[in-house]
Image (cartoon, rainbow, N blue to C red; front, top):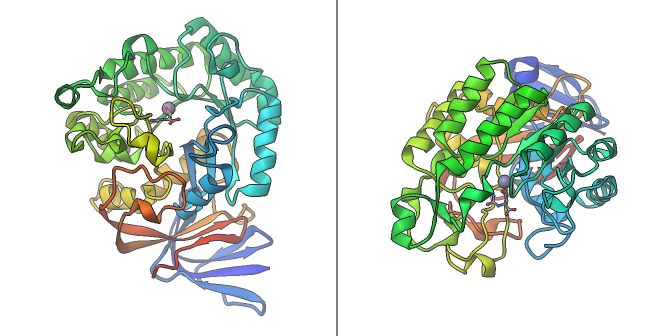
Length: 428
Ligand SMILES: NC(=O)N[C@@H](CC(=O)O)C(=O)O
Ligand SMILES: [Zn+2]
């Protein structure tokens, strides 16, 4: 089986290519990249004219909800949503029921994904058993079973001594620590950013300090342990400032930003609508602008979704009572194109760095590159196609988006995993 992708604009930071190239895929691998490749007999030719051809997007932060919350999402539906969003690789967080906190659970997830997921699944193990914050999970065994990182996502490990030991073990196992930064002792029943909007809606606020204190702690621990640290879903201007300072100090820390945090602010919350409730919350304009600037300057090196599906019933309970989280897999590319690329904040090349090449390096996987010989995980993008976002169109079980009705420009055309087309946009 050979597939010839012809006439597209290849954008591949790994090989520093950005220009007109044809890509020949054979046996699931990138076989040849050249300015002009003539089709041979038996080649299936894919016309990519007008498209970006990029290494498959990699999402460092999704929630697949399986096992335990299959009514919100499953490995199968979450993977389909990712493919529709242009992703060929995703990292599911371990806050399932039971928690992914052992080598057995990591293997279970890998096996199930092998059979049911259309994209590559890279497991993330919990830091502590059951995410209870009391006892470390067997980090070494999870890494040996295939976990690419550990994370306590959904909360932070508040016991600093325990967490430091976990970081040391992650370093020894050669895996990354993905940090959800939230000081549990400060957050209370906070539902929205601390400020006028939370006040007006009569809910408790979540201050920037809730994130900043743990981000600072974790950076200091990365310095003392030498572990590879990555900050998840950053929402504050001081997170950006701290990452910048840490890197200047030679600390091995990277960070990601999600579309809702680089596009929306608390002022966009129209009223008591839980589709605007996520953790961390939508912040101030100042924070949002600092995140955009951080992405633009390359301080924040990754864009992730924090795809967090919930049922319609759960999200109808109002801001005070509904669970935190919004979906993101199927809108991230279009939103990033519309708000960062078409506005000149990121070049298309930088977008590919933030969404594929750097994420691959952050978790140390051999992806994010279209060099000859690499696995043919490829995304085709139509950069100028316009459409309106509708939750009803999502293949995810979750429809909880704050971007309903948004007009966007830039759309995923095809997603190719290991040389096989797993998603095609046929709404043309
Ligand atoms: N982000 C969220 O608002 N919710 C996530 C947890 C998380 O990623 O912190 C979830 O599991 O629903
Ligand atoms: Zn989180």
